[in-house]
Structures are given as C-alpha cells and as structure tokens.
Length: 383
Length: 239
Image (cartoon, rainbow over all chains, first blue to last red; front, side, top):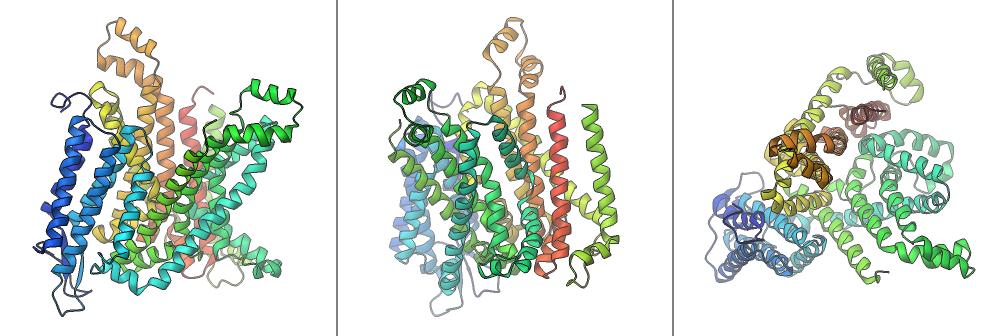
C-alpha cells in the first residue's frame, strides 16, 4: 500500500475516508419504526432537495478528505474537511428522517441506521487522525464539530429523530443530569486540587514525601472505581450517623459524597505528577538569580516557578478534567446523579435512545473541557 | 524476589480463604450492618464469581496482547509508521468515552450478558498494549540496532534478540495497565449482566443492602491489587 502512495501520503486516513463514505451505502442511512415497540426497517433516502444537497456535501467532503490524505497534505484542511463531512452526514440523516417519516403517524420513529453511525464513528476517528498526523490535539476540531451539531440541533434539523424527541420529552431531567454531572466533575477536581496542590509544593523540598504521595496515588489507581465507591459508602454512612451535622451538609453513604471523594482520589496521580513536574520546570540558574535578588521561597514559587511551570500544570489539569468527566458516570450507581442516571436507566430498559442521551453529553462535556483547557494553555504565553 | 513471591502467594491464599469464609460470616456482617436482614451474600458462590471475573478480565487482557503486540510491531516497522496517527487518535477518542459508555452502547447490539463487557474490555485493553509496544520498541537505542545489523542479524533476529528483550519492561508495564483496566471494567460490566465480583455491589446498590456492596467492593479491590502486584513481580525479576 505504501508503494502506491506518493511520499508522505496517509494510507490510514484515506482508508477511513473511504469507509465513512461507503458505510451508509452498505448499512443504510435512516431507519423507521412504526412505533416505539416494533423493530425499525431501513428506508431509502428521500429525494427532497435539502436532503440531496446535504448528501452531495457529505460525499464531496469525504472525497476531499480522501484526496488530501492521498496527497499527504494533512494540514489543518484535513481536519476542516472531516468536520464538514460530520456535519453534512448529520444533516443528511436529520433532513432525511424528516422527509422519510410517514405523514400523519405521530408514533412513527426515525433513527440513524447502522451505516450512518459507523460513518460518524469513522469520521470522528479520521478527524482525530488528521490532528494526530499534524501533531495537534483532536479536542479542538472535535469540539468544533460538536458545536456545529449543537447549532443544527437548535435550528431543528434533528427534530424528527427519535433521539431528539426523547431529549425533548426529558428536557428537564437531561438538564438536571448535565448540571449534576458538571458539578460532580468540577467538585472532585476542586477537592483533588485542594489536596494535591499543597502536597506538591511540600514535595518539592522533601523527596521522601514525594515518593510516599505518588506511591499512594498510583496505588489508588489500581482499585476499580466501582469498588472504591462501594468501599466509601459504609464509612461515610457511619460518619453521617455519628455526626448528624454532616448529614445536613449533604454528606452520607448514598449520594454524591462517595463519588466525589472517590473520583478525586483517582485525580490525585495525574494532578500531583503534573504539579510536581511543573514546579521543577524552572532551571536552577533562574532560581539562583531570583534568590540573588533577595526573593523569598514563597516569592520564587509565585513569580518564577508557577509562571514557568504553568503549561505543564495546565496539561495535567486537562488530563484530570477529562478523567473526572468520565469517572463521574459511575456516580449514578451510588446515588450521586449526573448523566450516568440516564445511561443506567437506558441500560435497565435496554433503550438505545436513552443510553445515547446519557453518552452524548458525557462525550460533549469531556471534549469541551479538553478543548477549553487546551485553548487556555495557548493563551498563556510560553515562557 | 523469592520472598516477595512467597508473600504474594500467602496473600492469595488469604484472599481465597476470605472468599470461602465470607458467606459463613453472617454474624460479622450482621454486626457491621445491624439494619440489614440478610447481610451475607449467598446468591452465588464467591468462587464462581471470582472465576468468571478472572476469565473475563484476564481473557480480555490476553486477547488485547494478541491484537496489540503484532499491531505495535507492525506500526514500528518502516512501512507501518504512517499508521501511528490512527493509534494516537483512537487513544485520545477512547479517553473521551469511559468504558462504561462503551458497554452501554454495545448493549442494544449484543444483549445482556458478558458479550458487551468483553467487547469494551478488549477495546480498552488493546490501546495500552499497543502504546507500550510502540513506546518500548522506539526506546531501543539506535546503537544497539546498528550493532545488531553489523553482526549480520536478519530483521527477525534483530527483533527477537535485541528489540524485544530491550523493550520488555515497557511492554510489561503496558500489559499491567491493560490488566488493571480490564479488572475495573469487568466489575462495571455487572450492570450489563456480566457475572463477576461486581455483581454483589450492583445487587446491593439496587436493593439498598450496604453489606453486599461492602463484600463485593472488598473482594474486587483485593483482586485488583493482587493481580497488579503479580504483574509487578513479573516486570522486575532482578530485584
């Protein structure tokens, strides 16, 4: 394969572009079920003009991606084209579903067919591959694709899909779960920072403390999260029973407390590693010069070590934030709420729409956290 | 080394003894949780749960090694380097989707039981294996490779006698991560109907029985720590 390509071509990316384009042809674009209980059937794409335009845009973007990959021109353009392909695919499916639903049967439900899902997944992989080939982060283009999809959703492109109907029917629940999830992730990140930051600053001076702290944090990583949450329930319940004042603060065996404490325990390792490494970035001669100017150790920490180490620390924060969003899914199992509550409800009812309603916002939250912190790191001038 | 192995063996025996004792220790659990009417988990044999947990997680980690090792080897050969961006991309996408979401998404396709869990397990275990294979092989110093070439070793001999032995510690660390991820993901798989040490946790959570939760959590965590230490012994035989 490598021989066939001109030098520097991206065979994997070309293959992904071809797969994305072929999958809907093979496995279908849209499927329609007469109602919620009957099984769905593939339907041909309707020939309405907006559908055809979106359909053509999808194929053109895939072909453009193929051409760029073939020529090895994997600059920003490949990512832009891949994101355009995602949006065009979504528009094809959304508009196609609207046109394919039989008029006057409010119970009929349309959803993307397997081919559309495969194409979406492959295009996400292609976008990330294009970013990786350039040496960049896939979070930014993927977050851009998400924002585009969000704008299309607000414009009503997806209103005929059963997933959108499910979301509209559960709008209140979805909002509460989203806010709860953000609070769980943010709260655990804050708690972990509160523990890791002072300990990292102390570890700078005491290697023994650093070894003990990092050892404990990496030992914790081995414990499965479900088990850690479960282990925390009984002691927290006993604590809340012994000190009723804590219960009024929301601390108890069942609820967000075991999840937040458990998640923050897992965040200690990435945070501590990044913070300690960040504090060590400042070269010895710079530190020497600062000491020569009569700066105190605290002053050096504030005006030399922190600014110089900021990029490393932000990278650690980014990793920890993404992990926090993912780990918070399990909080629902111990009564902590969040998007996991939709996901596990969907598992219990074997309802794909409900599962997707839980998974998509998790994906969006983690990509937005990733992209947001990546942008923030860019704003800070590299020292 | 031998002493650490003996310690690990003794701890494994203690683990098995605790599994045997758990359903017989109703009075202990009853003393810890006086409000629970049936505090000892007796629905399944703990040994059966352990066996299926091990079969799923170690099996998935094994499959992951079988996929990830050759893929990593291919990606580090001259023709395969252009495949690396896809590997990195898959890795960063997997970061954004927690394993439990992968289990949930494959559930409507594969149905309740061990299948969705096994799929998610293999997906999430392949990535660390692949990453470690690539990182390990790329960490082999160029001098060593040049020397091997100078000795007239064929590519296959270079791989077997020079590259793999030098990359071995990094390779094993990747397998260790894969096993940790597998053990944890298997426990979550209990939600989707996979029988494992996580099952008592899930049953306990849905029936408000904290005694079941504690027993399942204790044994799941203990198993994870035991397996991790076992892998740790493998990767540092000289100490």
